[in-house]
Image (cartoon, rainbow, N blue to C red):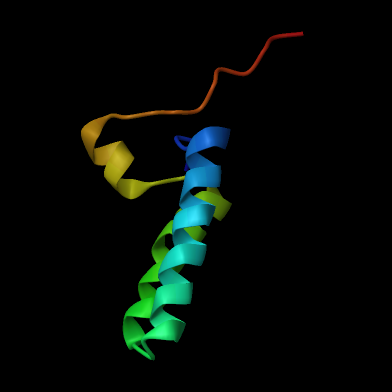
Length: 64
C-alpha cells in the first residue's frame, strides 16, 4: 500500500474521528465505532476509496 493520504487530510481524519467518537459516546450509540474508519485510514496513510477514484493528497517525497 502506498501513501495516498497527506498530512492535512490526516489531521482532518483524526478530528473527524474524535468528533464521531464523542457523538457516539454522548448519544450512547454504537455508531461511535464508525470513528474507527477515519482513525485507521489516517493512521495508515492509505484510503481505499482514494485508490478507487485515483486520488492522492500525499506530497511527493523530495529527492536528496
